[in-house]
Image 1: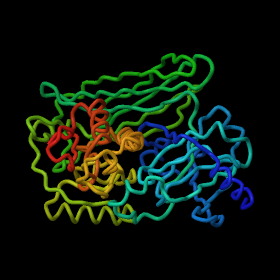
Image 2: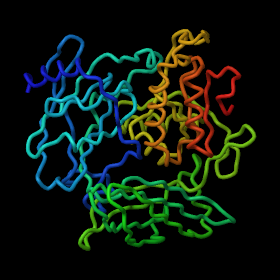
Image 3: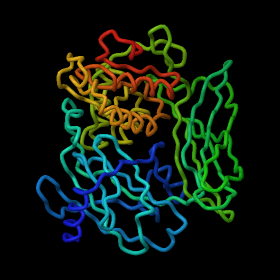
Length: 430
């Protein structure tokens, strides 16, 4: 495998690729309802931990790889590689060919890798290298999470749940579920997809369940809209003071049997921005915030967050997107989050000449937008996120942050977008 890795390094140096990752909610699937509730993958057949081992170094490139066996049963499945905690920019090579790359190593990402796999053993190699845009990460704190922790591979049926948008809103004294289930059909012919769901109150009372069938055209996606009146249950509104969560499970049925359980937790209520103030469930928030990034483990982070909450803090400001369990913790214990894009340049923040600061370098606008899109789609359904921050406070301002602000406002209609380095310009909501 080391000889193969050396060949891959040579090919990487000769390649010019466009990084492509899947822009959707980050999720994994389970084989049983019980495992989905317990977040236990130990018995999930189509899920495996990706733990690459060192294959040596070539110059400034460090190689890490793992041999992955692809069974024949995955022929009707899409396979995804989830990457996080690389601690540096990286290329991904599969069976000797570099297939994609990422300069943004702070944002966890899913990659669709089925086209590059073959039945039997596959060599999946990460080439860790210095970033071509290292100036964008200068002000970010170094991650304390173990390298490659949280990486995995999972297979999902080619006709199944692709993504979802979930909200519970208060209207006229009642709660209403607004659940859009996005079904994907990657076959070359129309498929009838049976999607099941159930929803439980924070007190584990079953509210509703159903299985709905609908046809999805070949190589396309369609949306199943679920609208349910949850009744006058305003005591279940989620806030940092009272973090109550509804629990929903999505799954598909094939041959009358359920498959691919996908757990979704929903905090009832809305975060909105009006007249220069952030509101949660119609009440203005008094924010006491503190900078905080996930610690090396979920257990330690939970202790940290509870300690901060005991001191009166109710809002965390990470430097960049965090592991998925970080948002689970904040949803669980009741802590607001101002989600920040992985953009922390510090060079010449006051130089407004074109290219004087990275944020005003037109050549970097695609990288700014790519990082923003990856951040937003991954965790957009989280109740704990009350605002978005475009960049660190020393990022300067300019064309890249103008375009980033415009895009984020085009998709996020309720929560505010902040740019602490706007210095009085228009691309910030505060």
